[in-house]
Image (tube, rainbow, N blue to C red):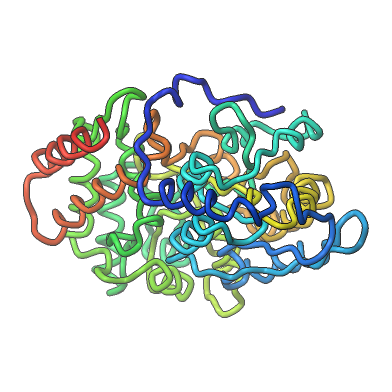
Length: 431
């Protein structure tokens, strides 16, 4: 179905933007006389730069690039160039470039950064494309609507609302897939004690703030928590406290490695050195498509999170730079991506993620990767990490929460008191 606008009540708050917005407004004002925003210098051909951190992902990256690199535009005069930026500094680098009036022509963004960039005025409105494609688009594209306008479309919606596990390890130890937190922790402890490897692993450091947000949201949502009620922040609500306590208990139990970043523990999982992960469909595809891994499609299992409620999704949005010198070519590329040819082409690299249309994964892929069905099902109920009513300030909210959780993990303390302090700090800062 065609995307519908986000309810205006979500956008009526007076938003206090940090960093990017102020920089962007000044930068765009300073370069307005020479950019594409004047309507000058646009063409439907030439070089088109496309930025996506996924290009650097093992296994998955080359598949995605191969799917799009042959695009040459409706007049066969476009040369697509990839821009490779590691995920760890992707958001900061793009914000800096876009704030200075530069950056790639087309980009893939996480929804939290997308909201801030739209509010800063550096993304091109794409309502015309939404009108053209109409019912071909499914409701995942509502993620690209901001303040009643379409500024992007669903590139990929990988859900984190799934536990992946090494089926060989589970069969070796006679383990059942956990369905509750207590079962999960017991299972992880069994793997650790019996095999001497990590029973589970996950992000736990603010050095990986964007990725950890997605993972920590699994715990918050899984225990029935929320960071707001749509109007007010609810950082210290009982369900959030319970979720953080369970997260800290998991690390305190010794089943999870301390200090490993996502790249490290994912690689270890692929090599059979970690029993379980709370992961997204994109990572599962990457792991199972890497020929060096011992975990392939037939030995990777997937099941709902061992928590009471669905977890998070990582909404990725394709958008166009409002200051691009080649906006028409950029918009043509977005049209192609959303069309049947483009959706079919990139589906091969996006595996079990929900996409902008209802194009289904290849039958051979599903047969080789039976775990994919769980991710497709979980995408229907998983939730965004955007804080309702505080969408453009979501990164600020999550940073305060995760900084507190990291401090609790390292130094200990009372979780309820700590989250109450975060609540008070954020209320003072954001209102």
